[in-house]
Length: 95
Image (cartoon, rainbow, N blue to C red; front, top):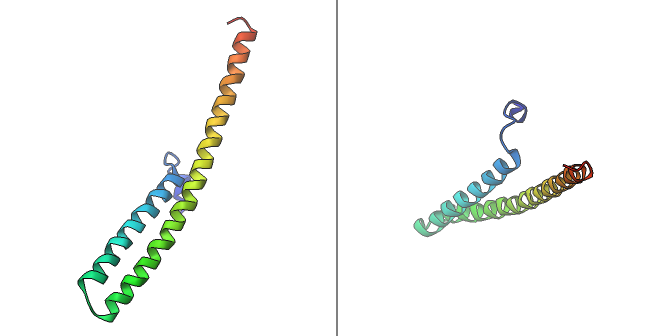
């Protein structure tokens, strides 16, 4: 659907990060409910698969968090470098 081209104002890595966190929390809550409330084998199996899905989303959450952190650090260093260049130009011209 190429939504990232249509809605360029959104921070897509942050949206993906929030999706992973939300999915992990929902799967974890539903898995606990399935295991605690129902005693049949199918509910326990669903709970185990839910816990597995929670782990997978948590790993994805961790990987995306590292990518976003690297991106933000690069943005900060680029902003600092630009500010230094601008400051050097201003001092060099006596402004």
